[in-house]
Structure formats: structure tokens, C-alpha cells
Length: 353
Image (cartoon, rainbow, N blue to C red):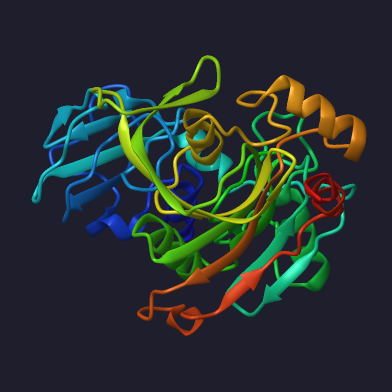
């Protein structure tokens, strides 16, 4: 029983949504185990069109780099990692004993993790306000004060999380923000809650609203549509009008709130949710987010840094509303969680007067 729980945890860590499968069997997949692979496996019977991919996306079955594509079979054959799946396809994931065992080890808490700003909490979910400059999740061993660290320490201090080896599930963030984007993040405290939250985000049953200060004088609401691709080597996204084989459609809605001195405060609705989508979309529009070193305008960035102490993009995930009325967290439907604008935003807005 412990191995089943740990494997479910493993799938959450690797961002493979358990809810995407019609049936899940834990143990030896039918037909035996290919040479050199572990006996530990999971079989997915596909009930919808999804894609095996090596990068993070909430719309597809995802295999993270920690689980190589060679450890996946599609209908009994090794998978290349780019197949479009059809109803009835069977995907088997093979996990080494060492990897499986690592999920059963006691988790290490970071006692030096920073304070957590809690917006809402119940037995299933924890909604927090992520500050600027803090990673959502660690991307290497050196990053030790992430939102994940803060959440786990907070829950452990409350007696709501057991980091011991026998624990069946580790609470996990279900949406992520860039390091220098502040605002609402949500943690699933139980496996069922994490599955529901992941599904809600993947199926666009969560209304995500942002505030941003952008260059330019915007007077009317609009829709930004295009095709998004990510340059992983440069960690930079590009949105273009033309579709290419490696690009996915994206959509961003916006409306001006106030403007002045050549800058505009905009309210943004994120329809899709690709990496750096808002920042790349407004760069394409010719109105980059103020303070954005990667996509922004150097002259505007220098002005706001000098006059308001702005060190990174003025982008804030202000509001989150769930719309899914079904399932374990259906009671959250209609609830809006709001993170107040950080002080740097208040200072920056004076430059619009």
C-alpha cells in the first residue's frame, strides 16, 4: 500500500495528472518489463487526446526530465516522446527502484524559509500571496527558500504535514508564477485536492486576473491572440502571428484601468497559460511590461528603477476565481481570492499621475 501512495506522489511531482487516465494499474504492466527497467510501473488507458511531451504543460500528460522518454511505452512499444495519443491508447511509465525509493525518503524541511502570507485556508487547500523575488518551486539544490519550502514549513509547524518517510502525499503548488511575478498561488494539501486543482487549471476552470504596468497609452480593451513557442536554452518565449509546428495557440485579454505619461495600468485575463505568456504577448503588441529585463524597454525600466525602485516586471497575479462546481473542491466555485498590490506597484503608479 505504501508503494501505491508513493507512486501517486511520484506522478504529482513529475506533473503527470492522474485524473487524465481512465484506469490506473500499479505494478507490472501487461506484456512484461523491457530489459533494464524496473518492475515498478503505471499504466494509463487514455480517455482523451493528450500529448506526451518533455516540457511542462497543464494541457497534456507530461513527462518531466527526471523520467526519460525511453522509460515510456505506447501500446507496448517505446515512445519517442512526441506522439499524439488517441482514445484507447495505453501508455506505460517505468520507474527505477532508486527513483521510487527516493519518494519514500523523509523530506527535508528548510527551517530558514521565509514567512508565508496566507489568503485562505481550509482542510484541502492553502491560498497564498507569493512575494516578488521568490521561486514557486526549486529549480536546483541551491534554491532553498521557495514558496514550496515556505508552504511545507508552515504546514509542518501547524501539524498539518508529516515529512517522514511514511507520509503518503506531500502538499504541492498547483499553479506557478515566475520568480519576479507576485500574487496568488494555490497549494493542494491532499492528493484529491491537488488532482482537482490541476484539472481546474488544465481545463480553464479558473479565472486568472493580473495587473501590469505597460509601456504605451492604451485606451481600449482588446484581445491578444497568437502562437507561443519557448526557447528552452534561452528561457525565453516568443509569440507570433503565424503558426509553426512547435507553437501552441495562446490568448490574452486586457483592458486599461488608468494611464498617464506614456504608461498604462492594465487588467489582464489569462485565457491560456503558457510560460511568460503575458510578458511575451505585450512585447509583441509593442507595449512591454515595465521593469521586464528580458522582454521590456531599457529606457522605461531605467526610469521606473530610478524613480520608484522597480527592479523587475510590474506584473501581479491579483485575483483567482474557480468556476468548476463539480468534484472534491466544487465548493470553491465562485470564490475569489485576491492578493493586494505590493508596495512597489503603489510607488510605480505615481509615475502615471
